[in-house]
Length: 197
Image (cartoon, rainbow, N blue to C red; front, side, top):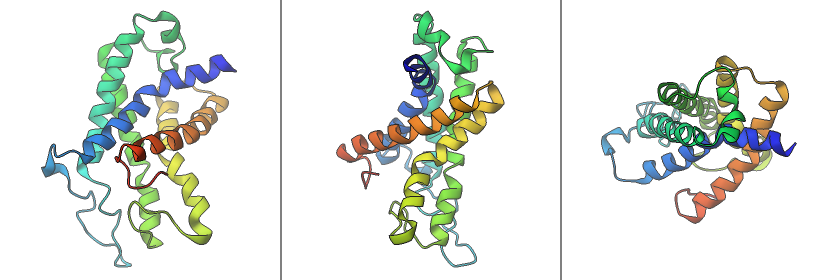
């Protein structure tokens, strides 16, 4: 069991670090011209924003680029750690090459942010403000969805590029759920998030 958990974390670490660094990047003054909403500040039929102001080109592109770089660096490090390299799910059927890692990281970053959008869309339909939690009956469903929406995207994409079992897929979502909460707490303490969850 311990080896299995380590394998999942070795595989997912570039995405975890990439998401954290992207949060800092989005808060920085860099590339202000990309800090525009993906929905172009347009409203849906209900006169509410489609995704909201927090889903920006800066965050979308940043997640792809930063995760690609993290994956490239992680792959380079794992080349000197053969045991850890052998536990990486993404190297089961592909060699640990820089070109593969950069493409893999970029696509994982893309899946991460893409699968956050339906959650944002649903929240706007329920008039939940961007960056805020749902209240009353909707709190717990959206609390869970906030932690796993991007993980579902990671699992979906992972199934396309490598063979992962159902336990591994559920493990990514389950471990990712608790890891996401922990990372969010850290980002909140460093004033990179508006709320701790």
